Length: 460
Image (cartoon, rainbow, N blue to C red; front, side, top):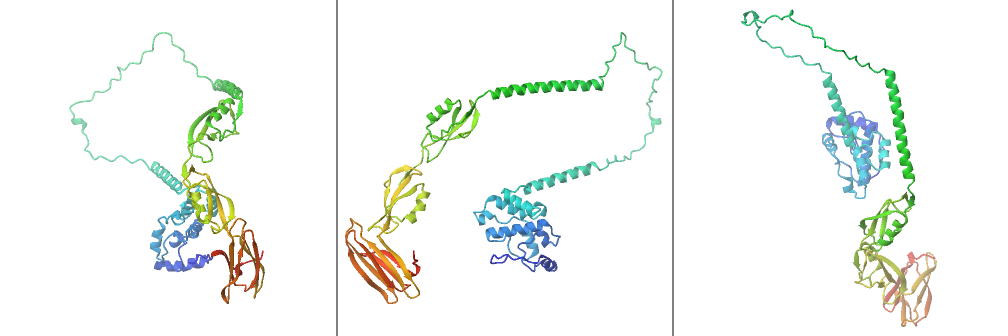
């Protein structure tokens, strides 16, 4: 990745040889911004090493910065790689959170914690999430290490008892003599008197098998009977299609649902500017679903809409205020565009409702926008030396008399080339031959109605 953002493919084997000599001086010969840690330590590269470089390249393309400071000192660079880079969302707020998680996993310092192949990296991108998180891999390692430690401890031999260096005991010097056991006086236990109960014989294995089979058959019959009873019970309940009550008043919706055998219940209110207050916004399950009779239908109704005050829009430029008005919660509708002697083009002439009126959020404001003066210009012919244009002007019926003045600016300067007073309802059409880079201006009295550079004018 060059400084200007251009991507070039390098010879990785030559770079590896160059860096293998330069690492002894802790200085890299080439740009190390996309090198994995194991490459900087001189270890053998794996597939996960390419994943690190891929993650660094993705970070650079999405944020405009490298994930780590651009330094050439190997020990300092390795220390930097052990910490997470700055958040991608901070550098580029348009990036989704799952994409940052995927790239940060690819930039893990330990190769085991990264994606192990490009297919795994691509799979996370398609799934829009990290399927195997780093925390899960670390937990597996801890559990594996605990099992190994436990197995190692169980294989250790039992330690021998420590030897005790105590003086020997001389039994001949003891005053008390241990009497010998009275073997001759021992008697045998007596046999209990009375008739003896014969011991119960153990059941044979064949009998056990028969009992298990009989019990299994009995249990299967019981389960089948219960299932049949439940199936008959549920199939006997009528099925009903939920009617559409969206937008209906709550009382009407309740009556309609109860009439078909359902149980409506209001569980909340939702702000919806398109539905009147205390009317149904949605139902759970949604309308059209087929359910059992007496099913509970959850209803959300619309609460009172937010009231807003209509701003004054007359004499405002439509292009400048359109986005602002929509952000405030209004919808603008251009009812008409008309010619005007008072307002320049794209200026609002009138509005409905009037300013300072209280209306619901999301309501519509109708406006009339000015088209300016009824004047136009069209290109008839143009070449390298000359341009022929046609200027049309009009004074609408009902207007006062209008003085039309045409100015032409070319190499000779700016000069008045035409002037006439138009009566109400009178029209004007005039052809002008001039230079292709000239500028034409048309005035109604002292008000500029049209200014056109002929070099930008195209034939229709």
